Length: 229
Image (cartoon, rainbow, N blue to C red; front, side, top):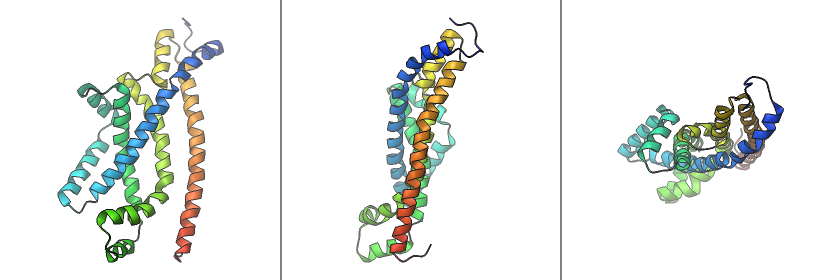
């Protein structure tokens, strides 16, 4: 046991690094699954909230507000202790659904940006509601919001330490366990912070690249339609 809990110890840092790194697959796995859930459920939330059946729309609005108003940590505990789901399943599901409420707002902003004339044109062509969404609205609404959806990948990634509260052994849980065993928290926590930075930075660079590409593509499409920006 290293009794000095303040001075940086390189030998100790190198010793614990492989153990913390081994937990990175759990962190990345939870992020990817939660992100897929948030994109899928977020789209479902958006479509249900815009339903022409008013009671369903109001019910969906209430559910979204309830989920957003409740801290994800409380939701994690509630689902973990009231369902047979494992810690990993609980974490991915809860984070995915919690952030689906925010993703649904992003989808909504994209849908609101589609000109009303597109809806009218669909009706003129006798498209059903499903056809209108699938062939006209979503293809125009989703591409412009892709950069914002990409940002939520980083947000979800940085929220994964919450999963340690329900005994998921991801990077933060591993660092805390090492700190508890050795009474040295500085090195493990610092290593976790660096790993989050190393993994987040390429994602942020890619999102900025995607933002420029989508922006240019969207601008070209607008110009092709003869609409001045």
